[in-house]
Amino acid sequence: MKPDLQTTCPKGRGAVTNAVSRYDRLSRHAEADGWDIEEDVPTLRTEVSIEQPRSIITYNRSPDLPFDRSINPYRGCEHGCVYCFARPSHAYLGLSPGLDFETRLVARPNAPKLLRTELGRKAYKVAPLAIGTNTDPYQPIEKTHQIMRACLEVLEACGHPVAIVTKGALIERDVDILSRMARRGLVRVGISVTTLDAALSRRMEPRAPGPARRLTIIERLSKAGIPVRIMASPMVPALTDPELETILEAGKAAGARTASWIMLRLPQEVSPLWREWLELHYPDRAGRVMARLREMHGGRDYDARWGRRMRGEGPYAEIIAHRFKVAIKRLGLKETAPAMRTDLFQPPRAPTDQLSLF
Image (cartoon, rainbow, N blue to C red; front, side):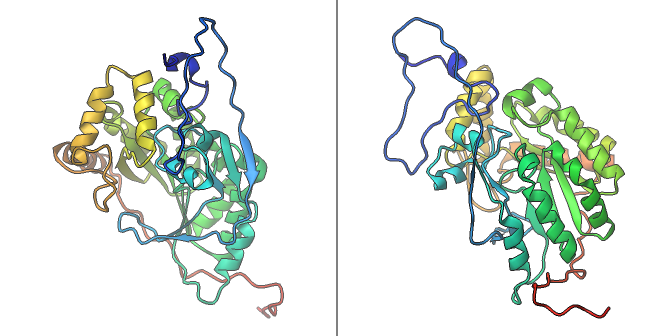
């Protein structure tokens, strides 16, 4: 007899289980012990380990992405968004993309030093750098480690453009740096708002700021002169997609200048994790949600092919895309922001460099 997920699911976490990754030969399954005795579910504490990577800038050639390079100050993310497409990356560490992804985190304190070194190489060609594309740089552990702030200090000193994606309210701490960079055309920020329903957000993104708090972030950054994008992402069929227009309206009212959307993505281990969560919290809509997703991905939970993975295809995907176009036109939001400047870039000086006379 399998245990009831409603009673064994850890509180305050997104994933329901800690299923093994695709690389593990053995699997683990929770089973009831046969005793009809209620027991408290143990609290899962967040653990942080330290990694000293040899490089920090990751390059990609995906035509689906508007950038070709990124950095990640952390591995794993305590926000615990159950739908996070980055969960499978934890498998490379020998950890579960489930609960391990949101409880066993990795910090990279030498990231700012590596960034400075890599930007200073003679072969380096400047282009916008993305941060927050895999895990959130402003998740709670940033308050202690301050790796993201140190990276921003390197980028500001070099005049290097950066695009940031986050849900974290801690970004407000760095308004001083971001506003200075914004005046020079060196930064833009995307704030992800998945739903305006606080209860749904708490179940789906248990340790991320609530929807109202994220709108406040947009407002505060916008008032500081920092260009902000409202990201209605991911859109979940039959669960959050009815909110598309209201999310965009709320973002515009808070000061967002541009907008974007992405359909829910379920790569690798994310699919079973998502289906477990859906059956637990929304069993009445689980079948409908998955049917819509499969319609957009040729009968599968996910299609990883370029040009299809971000938004799917078919009538349903086309309807969402059309609704988005109509809404941003009505609201005066743009899909693309002005290009950030690259002409201000100055490679960081090595300690032995001769000082300039001017």
